[in-house]
Length: 256
Image 1 (tube, rainbow, N blue to C red):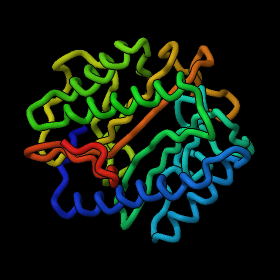
Image 2: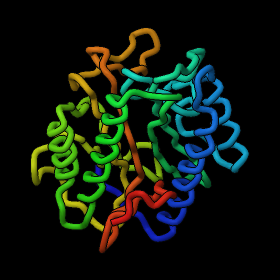
Image 3: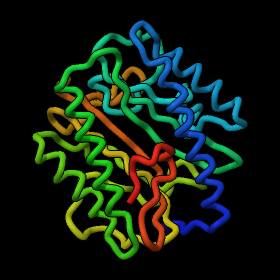
């Protein structure tokens, strides 16, 4: 399937949905504290998105039951919100995808619960930098594979591993579109990037081994195989003629 080049009108719609997704993450920060359940965070997420005239893309997607993903500590991704009470020292990823006027915006970030260890802080900092070096590769004429090449090179240089069983993806008109965006890839591999492409860059970096194991009971929750910590950051990225634009970056942290 071909990679869709978005029109100016589509880009504007995706931009608005991306901003709402990012604003949702910012709104949820106030609830990330010890004693709060991940289910309560999901409830507040759904309320906020609905109050802004949108819907959560994850709710009902292939049977997924919640409006966001809440991945704690050794959960790599797709953690289902529920009865788990956040504890001091936890690290939490919240992943949100909004559908606003038919357009999709997808983003996630890490949160510290109370006081976290320096070990956890370093993993989060490096993962965020992995996202930065990945986005920096999103310019016309470059190969898609260089995103994953640079991400993995940085992660490994810090003694971490990059999850290869999950990847980024095209987004905007549908939840998941072409292309798949691997976070481990050979240099100069994959399709050539073109102006108007929109996709997510969302590296998942593990403190230990790269492999994931999916919970057989719920069919979603992906954990590290060794129980070590995992972190993830994600932005929806637009390839323009001059520079990459992270449409979900409302704080201006990823400006190139």
